[in-house]
Amino acid sequence: MVLTDYHIHSICSNDGHHSMLEMARASHEKGVTTLCFTDHCDLDDYLTGKPDPNCFSNRDRMLDMYAGTLPEKPEGLSLFLGLELGEGNHDPARAREIAATPELDFVLGSLHSLKGLADFYEHAYRSEAECLKLVGAYLDELIELSRLEFFDVMAHIGYTVRYMRKAGFNADVSAEKYPEKMRELLTNLITRGKGIELNCSGFADPLIGAPIPMADVLRLYRQLGGEIITVGSDAHRTHQAGRGLADGLALLRQLGYGYITVFEKRKPRFIKI
Ligand SMILES: [Zn+2]
Ligand SMILES: [Zn+2]
Image 1 (spheres, helix red, strand yellow):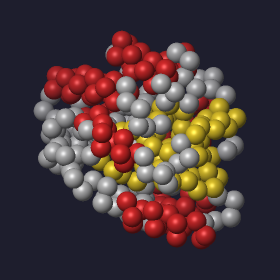
Image 2 (cartoon, rainbow, N blue to C red):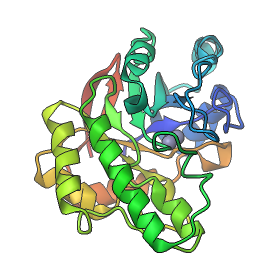
Image 3 (spheres, helix red, strand yellow):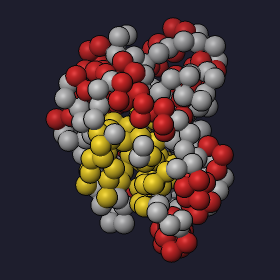
């Protein structure tokens, strides 16, 4: 089984805890053979929802740490440099400018907050009705994001689920509940040559116990002709390295997928699973 991880964070992310080298070594120990760092660059401040002019101030640190990690990396591990670029639909020109950083192999397009609001992680949810309204708005913004060209793969469709469940509300982001929006979103990505990710962080999360996006979204994506799919642990600490990747691959096989995708210099390459 070939384990690839195209979503992992280091201390170049505000919520990261370990260096790229430490994350690379921990991933290698878990059997990962291809790893792409995707540290955060969120266009908006996660608390205020206002544009953050310093959102990419870690650029040089990230490039330096990556360059310093390459000669030290474990043998047999291929390393790449990506970015998790958040809220690109809030300022597409800025997103395009950041994503054009020539050193990047891969850009994840994320959405952690709606326009003018705090990160879903920070929001105080009060009712199921409020959660459903927010999920509808979240999907609308994802659709907006899906029309933009700056990224390669849309990250964690259904990011909201964890925080709403934590507050005691069930607001699943499923293809069954949102057939039209989901179809529009996935079709936009497919026709523009973009992919989705299978974010494996949900498998081990007792609040979720499932991938992000949910299996029915992964099924619909394939039915609609989607082929580009990356797999990621979204690890922020060494003990989370490699988490769920094998479960993710098993699920993809079960759903009839024959390949996963890796990126180098923004070009997809397919690996048989
Ligand atoms: Zn994210
Ligand atoms: Zn992430």
